[in-house]
Length: 296
Length: 304
Image (cartoon, rainbow over all chains, first blue to last red; front, top):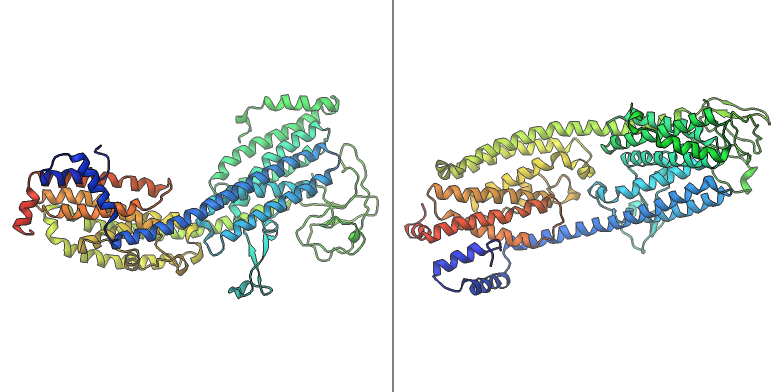
């Protein structure tokens, strides 16, 4: 029996007091005796309550983590789907398919909202924030492709309203519109929105590069201006935002530099080089970029 | 460069193509053309296939509406910037609230330090006799704590406790420890979460308001366990040979209680891992006393 096992010293001192031999067997027996028979003291009873409380909270947290993972995966798939828009003639079909996928994601977010009903959302925020950021990235990407603008936080939240039907006799009269239904909303926080938009810029950079490869020479210029606006916005926010923003700002600068270089390459070389070779010129150019040069 | 923007309905269905269109203010719309967008290099023309019927309800930047074969330009370079200003508004307000909270928490920490100073003196040999008076003094100081916490509650919306929890978590755990320690010194029992919250002037249940989170309470108990292992050692030095035995029973019961909990790998778990060393230390003290027969001597001589 090692000294690190609980109760070793207690048993040892007990035995030495009594002057018994065979400490090992008796110590084990004593341990088992202690564990089972005694009636629960107030302390033990209190800890049983704590156990229950902690277990409930951890279970909810885990459920939210699972849903958040599903949201992340589905959003990422939507983004991959949207990247195909540049290379496929029938963009509308892809956009509609993406819309359907995002509706599925919204249903999952509805489940998150359901779990969070009656809770303080910040207690569990860490559980679902990655999923929500990924969703913001996907939905803003789709919005940009459709409308060439940045989706607003209000717009995102407006689409995250869920109707839930309940059995007749629902207690919560304040929230019901019709008897038996109530409205559940999920509010994306400004910081999650910001982080999602920061990730969006990476996807836009990829879109820019792939559009050049497809012979679309207009998108890089539009993207360049758009990304510049976003970059300026982030610079304005500086470090008053969540701390992850500073890391993402660095990546954003790199993405912006790549896009600006693409525009430069197109402007300078666009007329000289046949379209199908533009992509090669461009990709060799981006690999020459030293990341540190992009940092202001 | 002027961003070329477009006016369009949000929906794409064909039925409402020619009907009146309503716009939401601040929204960007696309003039549908179906042809490739214009580029400066190619200088192609846009054809406007659908006309805009009602612009009255929108607030757009200056628009040059042109006849059929010309372009509609809308300057929108403010909108991304506006978005970020809007977000910055939220972030700035958040920062202000946190600043206010930090100020009150500093006062709370000061009060906690004062209580700790009072209670630390029980470790000294002379301090053992003065335990009741020190506990009384500590209880007085808890009133200051109550005032500060009442002030803290006013600094943020009550339902956003966990949003700002990180600011006061440390000091609240300290306070839980101090409460638990005082109650132990007075009665040698474990203060219940309800009683601890009452001494601090806060709730137990989240729904009722600023509350003592169960994890913070447990962290305070664990800090007290470390303090008790030190107290056991010092009480032997001061000549009190019975106290360590009582402390030992108490700590072992705490240990059994903690073993019931299913903890995750969070800070509470790490703190709990320290408990076994406290248990061990106290067991060693008890062992030292037992083999030398000092405990028995003390028992037969009566409490000092």
